[in-house]
Length: 540
Image (spheres, rainbow, N blue to C red):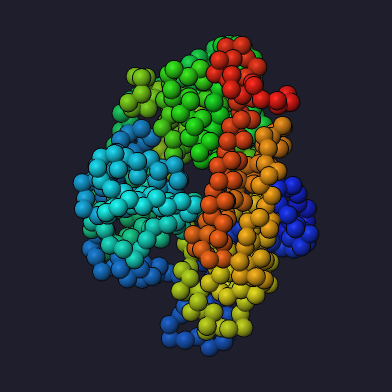
């Protein structure tokens, strides 16, 4: 499957970002790599390597990635796979081992998960640093780390390491980070938590490493009961329900419809909300003293948040995946449905149903089916491999080597900087985020320093008045996160980390103000939103 070049000819302009005229040229900006197919890209390069007279060491051979990590290969690691459904206690058992170790690292797919683990270990008097792409909180004397998987340090040695949601090794966009952690972390014990569908693939990958692999299986701690009847009327919504849909507009439409019934207030959770906002929305829903007793959410609830959900209600079993509208897969349905009936909540079981009766057969069959076994893992060459290849073929451009970011390749940057910008966590489906990446890279290449105020106007931030403005503010939050991410890697060149962090926090607060305003017209919420109603906002 060949990688495809995505060309953008039109852009959304943000009033928060300055000097956009150069960035708005209709250039081929980025290739979203199908990480499974990197081997096919490399196959073409191997032909090129052959035609130019290959060296004895073939730098384009990606068939032995375990050799990229000599530190880990010096150990015979004990690998324990903890596999089972959501709410089965598999991660709990792995974290108990981490907690009792002298040195250790937790690698999770989300900042929220890393944050929760760091908080848990520190509370248990196990000093633990928090390291993500956008934040670093260091504790004196800490010998443990909680990190997002991309930040896993493969140069350190640990007694114990945990990789959470290991089935994401098969993810098309982030799988390579899990493969890197799986092969590269040097630990005496490596605990892998996730779906049983990952077991055969992980076992196959680790055959060549001489690691000892053990599989421990878990069952749900509380039963999950599929309903035989649909929700039917929205009058049947009750406290503890979570209604799931897959677009921002549908989330707010459902929130409004439920709240118009006069019985419930709704928190909302979806992927493009800032993580801090998601956490606070979840906290309001979990708080029994809060009037926000119903949750309306996307599949972002599938991991990263502890939610006291009694019943999952699918508003639809179809989603747009960026290419087409399709039915949810078996793993997606099971991951979301499994969030009902969390162990430790006040509910003795979980329920799951759909709004429409026609969706019930797919729901039931998916819950009864095993997840399809993973067949492929993501893979991405290390910078050292790219650098060696670039030295071997100095006339072969970065764009040709990676097939990414034509605009980055045209800038006068060294290979390491090009690699850094191409690996940055930017959403290339978001035009404003794309603007930010281009402006940062261009300013860095021209002046060697990127001051935030040159391209960002903080005094213009304000509470959104519409869903379109909300979407724009969420995008600006992403740009500010990108600046913070770059500031940790190019500290002298991106000197305004504190300003970016404070403005990022301001975006979160303004988004929350918007969410509050969706509910403060309700009579029962008057006391809760007394502070907000004193402000002179126009109605939505």
